[in-house]
Image (cartoon, rainbow, N blue to C red; front, side, top):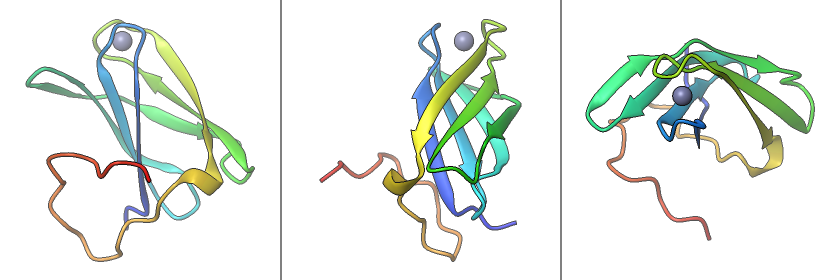
Length: 93
Ligand SMILES: [Zn+2]
């Protein structure tokens, strides 16, 4: 499945939560990163077809279900060919 979007947020416990979304903004996979520890973090999109939708992660580090709201119009589509993950996200304009 092609990753169309990548999103990220911070958990209450300060780990970095990330998810890969397909073109319908459904979660393909989620991860939680603390320092060099990267764990799989189950995640789900809620109301993915709406302009504002939520993604819920189950944080493997603190056990919280962390819900974050995203604005679909603000997502930047990734190039369709797979690329190495960039070391750093480009700065927002
Ligand atoms: Zn957490």
